[in-house]
Image (cartoon, rainbow, N blue to C red; front, side, top):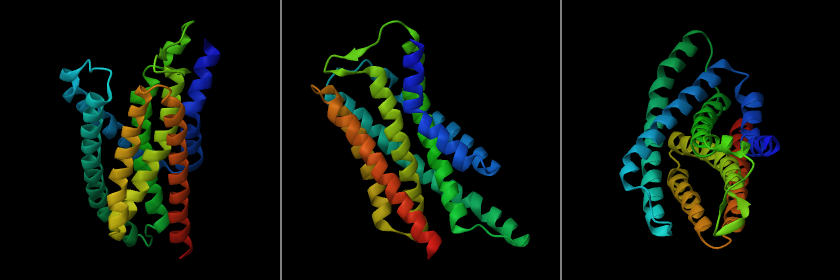
Length: 238
């Protein structure tokens, strides 16, 4: 039904769209960087899905899905480091050009760029894992996972999109801050949090698991956003 479509759309994608319009859309460079990041991560997800195409359909158990999730997170974390190297190499000539014109990138500018990279990562996940099947809500019925019939698959997808939008965007900022400041704690905790959040979705296969998993993931995303705000505050006032 249309009301289901728009309700789930605004739940899963509305906060991300609002963030883009309020924060990133004000600067054309950040818009381009976000689009490039989203395209890059979509390619990564497509390649990853092609790698595992020969293993589907998987048994509806935690074991096979856990192996796929762990391998996927490892691939994405390797790409994240590659993104940082690409970002650093690109930033060097841009900073040189800025200095020659009497300007320089501020700490806030660098945080915005990290946000743009992270937003692209989150947007690609939203498109790949939520928006791609959202048109099915236009039908008269809905779909449920027998292990957790309290939430439709579409509602779980919307909450996934919302939570991982917060998580992936925040983790990119934390990772870039760790690489820039050589903060070993930040560098180490990012893949651990990513792995933990991804593997937590396996609990949806347990009876009534979605009632625990989805609120916990949303809460994790909100806590990471608060932590990133703290990083930004410390860097801009110091």
